[in-house]
Image 1 (cartoon, one colour):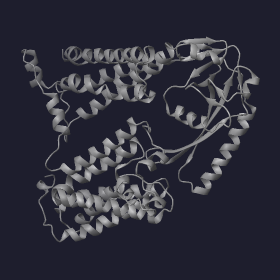
Image 2 (spheres, helix red, strand yellow; image 1 turned 90 degrees about the horizontal axis):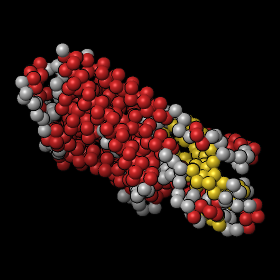
Image 3 (tube, rainbow, N blue to C red; image 1 turned 30 degrees about the horizontal axis):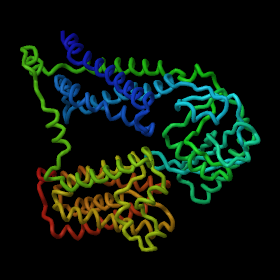
Length: 519
């Protein structure tokens, strides 16, 4: 009987939510962006960010209240957060795949006699050319570099190559063209390598790419795919600026495709169905395992709905709390800065060093030139999504203990002071490294936290419980810094300054009971 009730109460609403979410979002994408072209939005926002964020609406306001009917309690806490994470993934994955599918499946192909006719037609996703000449001599090349990975352990190198597309060979005397053909070469190496080793790897990468380019027949393709608003488009635009002669007089950048047009979607449609089916099966098992909360179920069977104000619950999570006021302000400020960079088109997973430098990253030559404000502004910049998320998690963990103990303004002063000292340590150690992140200030907080634990400000039970975890956190992050790609000088500078300040503050603090630690 309970299984039937779970199907009706939890499973069918899930299936309806998943189908409506995927279908409605995909339809809006096709109608507003692909078909009518009303908006010019980066593909990563439409195809990835949107499908990840939008499921939060039905989950929080429709499906999450229904999960309250299940007995998801455990000895410490509840399984409900785990269920929500799995549900979020199940709803997001098919929607992400569907966006790539609908863009390719509905993309029209335009047949042109030559590239000069492209302005006479409405822009489409795909093109064929009857007469064309790819100028493989007057090319433009741009090198792109970025770090990736959770701990910046990868160093990614890319070469963006553009070649003018002309009607005939003798058009090479012209100074403008109506489209370019693009090629991307990429290679990933370890970010642990030193500058000289990276330069050696880059030179070898360029040599290998040059050999491949020399042997590539760029005139052999079935059709051309128009490059959308992606990071690749930005790289190609930089390469266009370096073309020695031809000037692109429109935003037409293409990639060559050497396969039948009918195969453009691949197995995307089956991946949509497969991911939806797997998610539906997993969710069915997950809701069948726990039992109903009998009290809440009885209320429903009697016709009395268990009401919960989800907006109020969300507000309780996000609102500023007395005990963690400054911590939350700092977290929100760092996230807002990240979002500003994201919506400004700097990237999503990671940002390039040149962009971070332009908006306030720490860099010794510029600081020495009088730009001292970089010692502060770099604390609110991050290299990408994982960088900001991991730092904010570390800040939240230590902040909920330290802020009630120190008070708002001493806590804020500690954060800013240790962060600035960490920035000073970074430019003292690294002569020409672009550095960003709140980790120096966060290490300062952990340094003080460690000093207060060791000097027994906290109760013995609390100190014993958190001393080991704090040392593991510090040791692990410093060890990752030794492997390369992480500003360990800032970490150590923040940690030492925080520890010393902790010993100074110790004289003004009294031992407090464990029940008061979280405010």
